Length: 111
Length: 113
Image: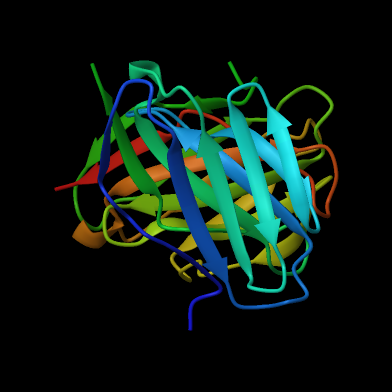
């Protein structure tokens, strides 16, 4: 079983829709969870950083962690064409600060 | 702009050759990481350095090596290149060692022909 799994999509939604992106992880000991956004030909940029369970909100973005199910989600409200990108979940899984990434979900928001 | 600088942006070379990728971390960051991104494998962790010392190693081939210099910049050396080494190579940096968010550069696109 992979440490972090993510549905690769692609996902296509109309402008203004609520988007839900999800990852599952294997080890219940993981405590920190991150979401990155990657535009084409660019490096991943940090969107959200959460610790343990619960929700964290930042503007139109909400990160949710359900440790009992080992499930993390990123919600995007009022999605915009500029949100079209690949979204990657990431979890520190090893010694040092090794981040293990999901495979990424490609999102397209259409006008 | 993340503040992490990678050079060159693009590199085209032949099989069997050796190349060096360079990374300057964000000001104040002591940790540097190297990741490889290919279409079929996603983002794969290669290696981490903290203040000049190796801290963690991932799926890095023996043909690949890295180092972090006293001024904290890092270099990734790839030798005896194969077609399968064609990928995007990202450098990232963070302030600390554990559970610190990573800040990525825009990568070096390596094409091996």
